[in-house]
Image 1 (cartoon, rainbow, N blue to C red):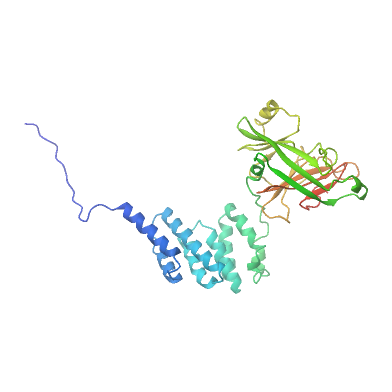
Image 2: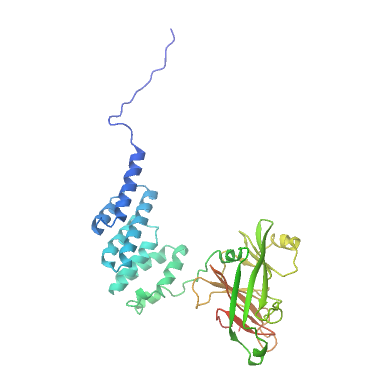
Amino acid sequence: MPRWPSVLVVVVFGGLPNHEAIADDTVSAEAAILDDKTTPDEAVRLVRGAEKLDRRARHSYAVTANTRGLRLHKVGKCEEALPLFEAAASLDRAYGMPRYNAARCYALTGDAAASIRYLKELKGMGRTQLDRLSQAEKDEAFAKVAQEPAFKELFVGLPVVLPKGLWRSLVKPGGKWTLPLVSKLMDYEMETAPEQITIQVVDVRKVGGADVVRLRWSSARGKRVGEEVGENYIPHQIAVSEKGVFTFGEEDSDATILAALKKKPSFTEPPKLENAYDREDGRFVFAPAARPGSACFGWGATDSTCGANPCCSWLCLDASGIIGIGGIGSSPFIFGLATGIPCG
């Protein structure tokens, strides 16, 4: 008679853990945190109760607490919002937003030490939070603490973090941007200055995995832009890839573009600040102070003695697309965003 192997049977009283029930409890608790019928104090208690959960669940609770706090903050109840922000920050050490919001609330009450403490935590979280930290320098909520030496010190040497994906705003068939003349840079050129410049997306196509945008530039007089704003430097074709951005002239073929895609991009993604005349190819990047969330990309800055004036051109972008262009050359003008002269 065959002998069957021994089997050890373990009986667990009460049954195995019900993970679906645990998930349901988490969802229910988070819903309660967001519910206006739950007092802020009770909401904070629910958030504190998540401290022993796993990292992913703690982050979810922290986001929920921060959301409830923001709702209270927006209706002027910063005193009730603050404990929620602090609970969220304590629950998730890698979550920057509640730290900024807590710093904001403390600043509004004039508590500089507490406000600066949270901003220091934000700064200590590294590059991913520097853009958020830089907002505090311009945020009116920090007016009561802005003159504190420790507050000012937070921004000394802080690198400017340029936004990602700005060139993607041009990858839109039918896109169109019209920019008014905002500055003429030489009086004698005024008679030839167009009142506005219009940029249109002619087509979008794929070349070697990149999205290639073909642009048409025209002036208010219905003429195509030529020497009016420096034809040599305005990109008529732009290839947007994961590697970065490549710019081309009107006549460049797909074969030329494909070959260029194997080399270094004209501008990296995300973009990096680069001064005019620092690069041999004359390209540069700057962040216009007048428009947070934007960046300007320049060409032609190879010779600071270009005639009687510096010689370059630039194109400014934000999430909506093209917001400004300018050029110093045969016809020096600025359209759209008034940037000043970046290559002067």
